[in-house]
Image 1 (cartoon, rainbow, N blue to C red):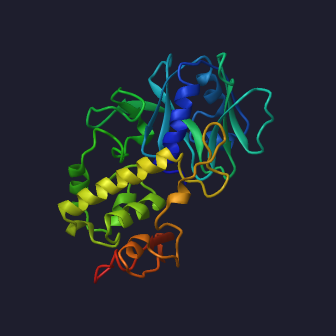
Image 2 (spheres, one colour):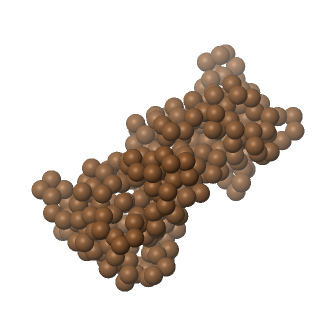
Image 3 (cartoon, helix red, strand yellow):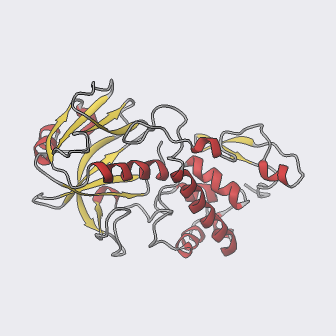
Length: 307
């Protein structure tokens, strides 16, 4: 599933190509992709027609378009799920095999005229969600200064790269829980935007096991973890995100290449680069975790005695 860097890459692309443009028409080719719009596909189509995209906003993995002219303030939420893609295409481009929703945009000399939502596995979708005030009165997310966010995302904490978030927030959230640190940072109500790949990378960089009890974590360790999370996300963002297959692409259809820079995730049986640099021999191990896999170094990320 796309994590914060991948969704931010898409947000920036949409901000460049879509912001300020009017939605001339909306076409739903598969009603399953607008199933979370409770009023149905026809209302979805009619509501979007004639609206202008005022801003493109992201918090964690949530992405939405603020729209003008609606009788009740609402945002168009685009949930990418496991395989969702948002592509900017010209109207003459052939339809993609898994095209689900097409938005026709007002003309702009330097930009294609269609925003297409493609979703092979149909876990994602698009829907309108009422805008509500943020709990702390700060901006809703990257891309907007308004203290508003979709009701559908109201439970999401501030994310790793949010300038309004502090390490103390992460420390307090972790200490209030009695669970494994990795489970906690995967909880979008604790800190938003962290998925399995970047959790493993940040925990390796911080140098301790994600099996640690969050209630016992010390402030200096949280500071290291917070810095590692931000560093990993920023480096992944610079590389355009992580793409292991053709399902994740940016709005122009290009894949990211951060997978070439991963230190631990997916490296089972390979040498730990930090240990090798310090003259030790240690091989990355893989363990089952919450129905997925965790990758760690058994030497520089020793497991707690009771896990």
